[in-house]
Length: 254
Image (tube, rainbow, N blue to C red; front, side):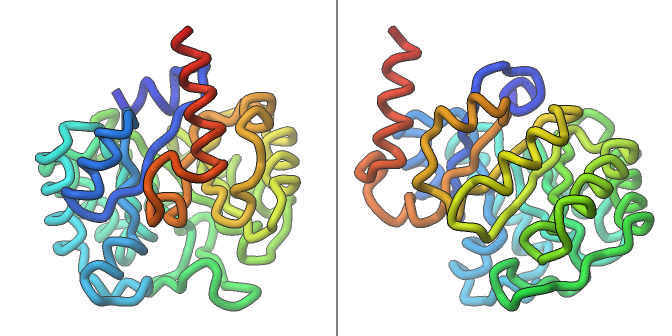
């Protein structure tokens, strides 16, 4: 089901963030068809920083509770895989056993630093990170959707670097690309989408540019949007971003 939403669906899809069984159940009740198990939110709910302080075992346990309570497909924020290619494939195998539908791995170094801390982060070597992706793909094949998260834009390395990495990760077996930005408008993301030409489906996280109309994502052929944690903190569908989504959903339903 998650593969259909991200990789095969021509309509824009939405994955709501969840950090435990209750938040997942709220998202399901609100009408979301899939969930994003956020590494940041899970870490914070456990009393840790978003810096790989929570272990992969703790992450996997939380994901299992979300899956059991919602029966929705869950895309798991796997950070960088908690180490090298061996750690990444172990994480993927355990997530598959617990019922996850997909894993997103970011091209960060271990231990990771939250994307919004500082102005320029070091990134993982392209070949080394591609090896992590290949190891995961060899381990879980098509049982999990594999999303490669590119930190080049948000870490200050530029558009050319982002496109270079997207191409390498596609060749390594990624099913979709997640691109992130710290800009307050979606211009950088839309530019990436235009250059990338949908070679693989694109997933976005509008943390800073959340006021962008949903129609712009549709026009850019974005595949999936992960609404920001700010939206979950308020009552679902209370603010303007979800107002846009709610109206769009009603319109789609006729």
